[in-house]
Image (tube, rainbow, N blue to C red; front, side, top):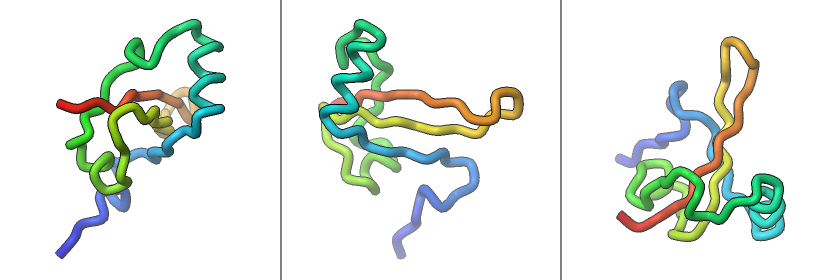
Amino acid sequence: MAIDVEAHQMVPEHEKLDEDEVETLLEAYNIEKDDLPAMERTDAVAKQKGFEPGDVVKITRDSPTAGETVYYRHVVDE
């Protein structure tokens, strides 16, 4: 039986950015992909959604003070 990890209430929304979005993000912060926090390809959500090393993922979390916060992660091999 497969478990839908993202269906759990504690798992925030994960969305893979396309290349244009990645370029815009990196230019806005004047950084490289490797400067972003890492997300291992063996992460449960990464495996379920098929994220590959090199992908940049936008994670949108609910926040009690800000309403919503956005984080970015760079998918890497272990």
